[in-house]
Image (tube, rainbow, N blue to C red):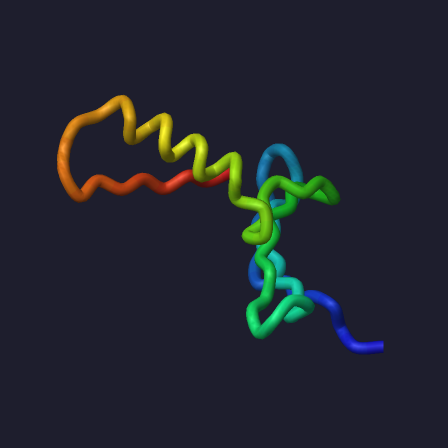
Length: 73
């Protein structure tokens, strides 16, 4: 059976191990990235609606041109 994911990196924290994993391509040619804390999923590159909504709210609170925001878990 082929490997379904690879652990890109991990670090210990006070709450447990935080890891970045890449699920090998299942949809098209791109992998799916996931951030986990222990066995709990925190973020996925497949589902980004919450992060997009947070960035829209953040940018609505400031004025300026060519602004960008990064949302992380």
